[in-house]
Length: 369
Ligand code: ADP
Image (tube, rainbow, N blue to C red; front, side, top):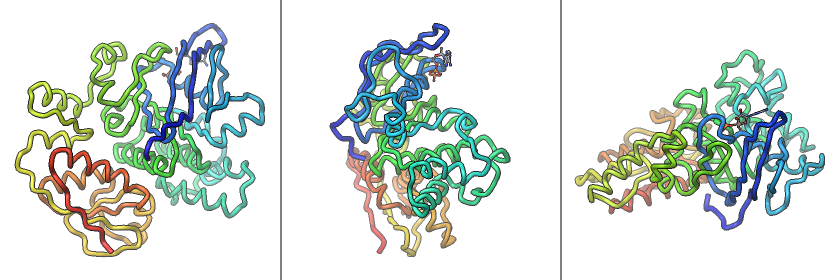
């Protein structure tokens, strides 16, 4: 989504000390722009979860202020209910937030408590379960599910609230690689619907290409913030935070210091363009849900409406995760590719095409009618 100039969450001089005396946050002053995709990085015990718990009022600061939508967070029952309707928090461990026995009951719990009409609750539950790929498990007892599946249920429960801010604490930990990419796709989808998405993660590779804003926390303090490129260029910060350098960033720096290119790619396919002189791109054929046409090259899918469509129609799609990046990879190798893409996610593709265009390469895009 286009990041707006307004601030959705803000802390000023926020400090927090747990009962027992452990000071977890020290003088945190940050602003989260509305519509932003934010990744918090930092070692275990840095204070990321503690900070997140201030964003939706689970914890109350010992000093300083927390504002949501330019108003101080109120810890009255009414104030918290209002806040949690809009700011949803997916905890690191799904077992800390799942209370129901059956999958769909857990996902319905939040919307049901918003006093929404039954039809609307059902619609939200269906949509959220589909987004996390758990629609076929809806009647299963949660304790029969794997850790990764329980995590997906926890994410679905948050999605069903249709939040303005979605906060996920290490959402990809314990998920298989395909689900990790699916989760970032879901995060893009929520973001394109207008929501701000905040995550914490140790996965620097994906955070680098996904985040608009990176905030590094160490020992309860903000050590650095900025674009992924800015933050990963700060060697002393990476050292203090114990962060490894994403491979793409390392390649960007190598190309830059060797004077070969000053253009920074966010993902492998674009950074590799700095090393290639012979690219004759294929054509990207974009298909929409509802559209059945000839498939050119390998086909990929991005977005929940497109996923539902290809599954219902039993369309053979080879690239089932990280599809925008991988379809573009095929195209830059000179092949055609077909991408089933939700309209709502066009902006993600546009951004990628712009990254490629920065290298002087225009990818022909054909929209299938
Ligand atoms: P992160 O999410 O970055 O791993 P946390 O916010 O969980 O960090 O923890 C920050 C610090 O607060 C750590 O030193 C941790 O041990 C401490 N801490 C977390 N929860 C509690 C608690 N309930 N009581 C006391 N100390 C806690």
